[in-house]
Image (cartoon, rainbow, N blue to C red; front, side, top):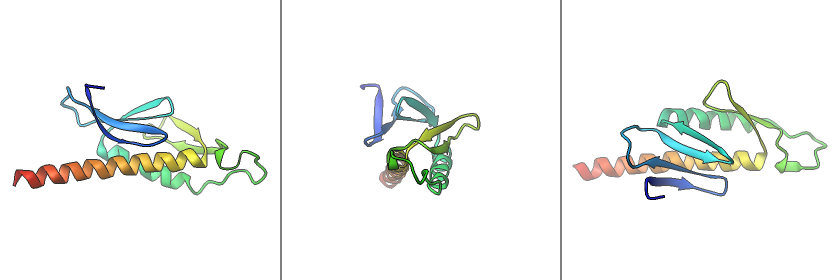
Length: 114
């Protein structure tokens, strides 16, 4: 954990960047899947999460909000994930928290330069 700078975490995952890199990519990990995304791609992913919230579970499903019946598109056109409403909400929080923290850090960095 010495080689990373943690940005945000919650029950489902964590976001961080590597200390020893010149890239602006953020590593976002949830479940057992990792994404390397820039800020615009995180925003795009968040839009896909918001779009997925309109999907409904099967009315007779005994799993309820834990049923993995929601198809979540990812920033990669070739990858979709089956998630539950609970997971979708946690992914939403992870992405929003990551964007907030990135923007806050950028704002503070700019403020301190002046």
